[in-house]
Image (cartoon, rainbow, N blue to C red; front, side, top):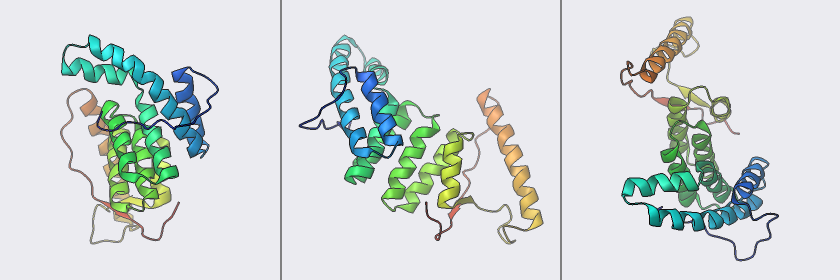
Length: 210
């Protein structure tokens, strides 16, 4: 892995079970207790790394080593560690790296994109936040939490007809049609019949805040 989770020098955790620590860390992050989340997830990583060292010695190829990392260290642990790192320590670049690793390991899980978007939102980098949202909506279009976050921060797609007002009757009708067609193309892609779609440009309302 290109980044290593830093274990706190002094930490008191209620268990030595790595997966329980992952659960506690994620729960803490979801409750906005980011310092606790950092501690739990860093301790979990330290325990899981011991398993990783053993399994990596058994791996023969680079592909097997990569698969071993995915098996031993849950993507959710990396994703939420990145979120906690950004929220508590403001180490945004490092935090985004952990989220990106989680996305690379589980590219269709909307939660990882949401955490990445929250990292960049906290960093006040609207361009990178918008990119994370758009990637997430493409990878997991039905993930409600990401849709809600996008609405909160003012993430909006460009109208179909840019020369008409967004709220015009024609743009609204075409927008609904685009949404239906998009759903159909995603279904086709799932069974191998879909074609590559053009990335939709996005717009952010500058006045919107979470």
